[in-house]
Amino acid sequence: MLQSETETFLRKLHERPQQPIGRWLRAPAHVHYEAFRMSDPPTQRPASRSEFQSLLKKLKVPTETTDLRENFGYGVKEAKNGDRLILVWQAHTEYYNYQLWHVPSQGGGEPTFGSLVFPDYSFLEDPLGSVVCRLD
Image 1 (cartoon, rainbow, N blue to C red):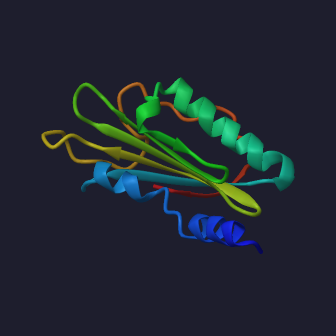
Image 2 (cartoon, rainbow, N blue to C red):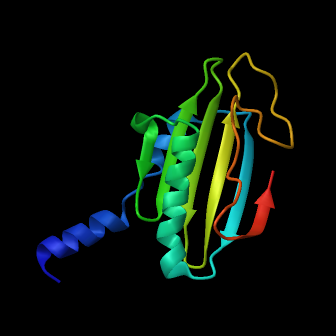
């Protein structure tokens, strides 16, 4: 490998695009995790990225609080009442997953189990893969 290729490889290897998410997190939070199996990963991996982009657009997540890479992305939206919605997407070898965080405002109520109650939130109606794991 050439020196510049090595440097590029090392930089990519140590890249941590998820670090900025920490500044938006606080407890308590209501977290949903969903993983979907891809039947054709080479085709569906890029399609899952497009699916995530559609979700960000549908929920009107500002581009200033969005980061999208080849296999990882996130978006953060803050409601007028101070609640935050944090969406994280990751594409793996055979599956992709979403972490969806509803962080109530400091004066807001306690999170509960069940559906996320972030204002005007709705998840994808027809996700790309088949559900293999769902946690609340």
